[in-house]
Image 1 (cartoon, one colour):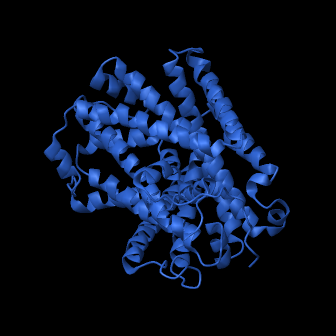
Image 2 (image 1 turned 30 degrees about the vertical axis):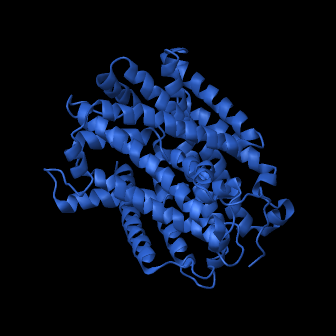
Image 3 (image 1 turned 180 degrees about the vertical axis):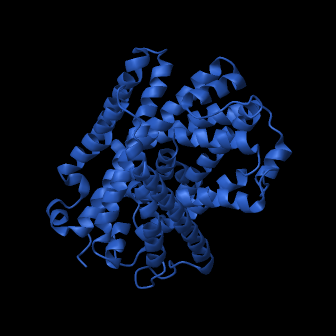
Length: 446
């Protein structure tokens, strides 16, 4: 095993007082807001339509499991005994080729997400502008505006600081937009409480409800997006076990923000869309839902919220997934790592970060571009293959006493949670792969 690549990060001290903790929170917001997207809003509102308040606990449970899994990834980064500056160095200890494969696969998965996020920015700005550009080219023009803004944000040396500012503003906007709307609707508090404590829909049994929860857990547990969190921690300057406590608080606050926003959207869906038999399948349907909830100001608030959530995700994914790619490639192919030291010093970094992850997704906003079914299938395949590998690798690394500092190997209850998430992730991956095989068979069979 080659010596770890030394990275130059800003020298920071761990927080001590309450206000220092408040000021330190950042990477958790950045990664949490990058995980959100228009799809989350649609899924949560659809759940509200289909289940009412029941099964809200499944969403909370899934994000609780994600918290533990991502914290395990962060623990290896902060508390390993070998001086590894990335979990990819740990993956390399299991098999030298693994970091490179994971880095490339994660980058592909991230690019596919970018094709959706870029169009989300354009769609939001198009509606906020009053339709400037027209129905044919309007979304493309505004997507181009979003792409240019993102490129300018990422080129500078303070790109991470900008990501943190955008993420904090996004949290504030989403809370004002959706939490305020949910409270304005005066939901049935006892029913909401019931939905948070393992309530099941009247037309579904416990087993079916558990399958829904398992699918949610499997979808988020092994996501390649989880690997970006340590990259943002490195940007913040966090290194070593003394930052473990603030890391747990930081990620917890970020996950809590997702839970609050998603549950608020769920409540609005249950109160408004369900009562009006509204079908939710696109952002425009969310705008209709918000109009029914708040009147004419509703759609504007929704488009503002959608802009911030996609504009928070788009640059964060571009930076995060590019850093993940270089962490993986540098671990497998050490010659380039020894030449440039860090991924960001590599001349290819900005070509890939800006050229592939920011500019190229603009192509998919062209009016004549068809639905990217092939990309969607590729994304599902990549995620399904990545999940068991990431989960299994993290479990092995964080249980090896030879790799972890004393007192930082997993406790029995941590292993129980992580093992359960890993098993569910493998199950979910198998069903995705099986579904893709069935789809391919239908296509081939005509």
